[in-house]
Length: 206
Image (tube, rainbow, N blue to C red; front, top):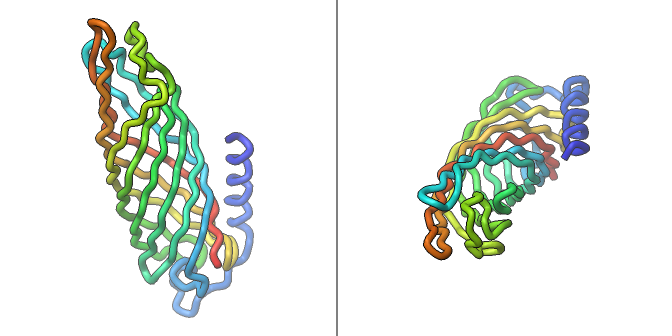
C-alpha cells in the first residue's frame, strides 16, 4: 500500500499544475465532460469497532488498508457506480460490494465535490479460531458472516485531463455483522455495527 499511496499523491500533485479546459458556463468539468462512463481504482483505510460480549474476548478497534475497484457513469448533476472492496483485518477478511448514487457539486473548472448514499452487502471471514483472545478454540476460522451495508459518503474530485480524474472521499457504513462464539462452557457474541473508510484513487473516463 505504500507504493500505491505514493502514486496517488503524485497524481494529485500533478493535477494541480496540469491545465484543464474550461467550460462555457464555468461549471466544473466533472459535470460537462462528454465521456460519461468511468472505471477506477482506489486505496483506502478502513476502521471498525468490534464489540465482544461475555467470554468471546475483548472489544477491538480494527484498522487496515485495502483496495477498491469501481465502475460507473457520470450524469448532470448526478453519478452512480458499483464498487468491490477488500481489506484484511487481523480478526477477519472483509469483502464489500456496494452501489452508490452521488450528487455532484460544482466548484469551478478544476475542482468539484460530491455527497451521496451507499447500499450493498458485506462478507466477513474469520482469520482465526479465537480472533478476540477469548481463551478457547471456537473453531470459526474460515467461516463467513454476512450483513447488509448502508451509509453515506462525501468527497472531492480533481480534473487532471478530460479522461483522468482524481477522487478523495470519506464514507460511513452501517453494518449488522453478528457472530456467536461458543466452545465448552465459554461463549459470547461479537457485533460489528459500522465501518469508516477514507479513500483516494484515480478514475479513468471513456
